Amino acid sequence: MFLARVVGEVVATTKHPELAAQKLLLVRGVDPDGRATGRRMIALDTVDAGMSDLVLVSDEGNAAAQVLRRPRGAVRTVIVGVVDEVSAA
Amino acid sequence: MHFARVVGTVVCTERVPAWRRHRLLLLQPTDAAGTPQGRPLVAVDLVSAAPGQPVFYVRGREAANALPDPDNPADAAIVGIVDAVREQPIDGAA
Image 1 (tube, each protein chain N blue to C red):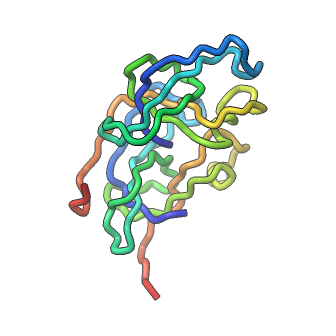
Image 2 (cartoon, each protein chain N blue to C red; image 1 turned 90 degrees about the vertical axis):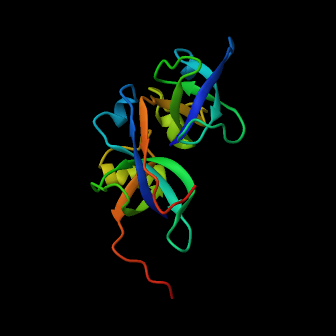
């Protein structure tokens, strides 16, 4: 999993059936200072995240299947949490 | 999932049976704005994408799972055609 910032939304009419009726958000990994300077990915939103939210993203198929409560399929990148706080040790 | 643009078609008459009903397309990965990033790759097309179109694709085991018969060796599959990306500048990051 990695910390990311929601930086946009992706509109796609034609998509795989497993992505039908799912919200696709553009997320960007954050650096240790919390700035969104990392890699961009398209993630399926399962937690009703909003623009500029700091979120937790999982990029693994089995995790996605569990969160979506369906058999393992074509989805692997999912937003699994909205981060309230990160405190550095 | 990642952004890319369709830049070509790959024809393989002899190929694994699970791919028989699908085309193989050459993709150039891009950023959200469509600027090329990294090396081209070949992906199984599941959305009838056309050359020049912006798409997004999934990598790894989930690419194979995206086909009707998941028992196949795909490591990249096109799973959507991008209509629009609305990105907002946040944190002043480039």
